[in-house]
Length: 80
Image 1 (cartoon, helix red, strand yellow):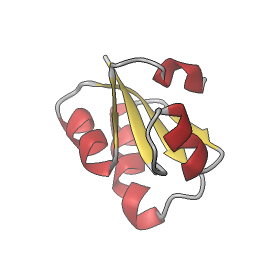
Image 2 (cartoon, helix red, strand yellow; image 1 turned 60 degrees about the horizontal axis):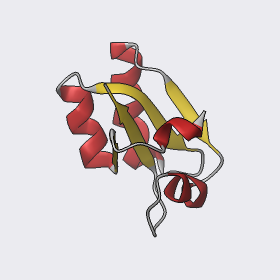
Image 3 (cartoon, rainbow, N blue to C red; image 1 turned 135 degrees about the vertical axis):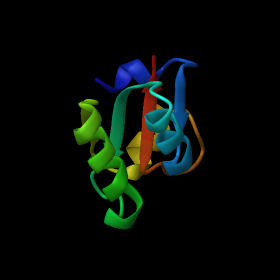
């Protein structure tokens, strides 16, 4: 399912994901299983309230690689 992140229509990072959720632009949210609860807790809550699908990725390193960035990523969002 992470192959969908191989597009330009994505954002990476908690602030960007929150912005996409708040503006109704989020299609699917990807969360690293080893991400800290304080980083992703509100994002998970917003996804559940807005019925946005969440896909869990093995770890932050893997999510960063899938997003084609040189650092670890806790969350990413596929945009509409």
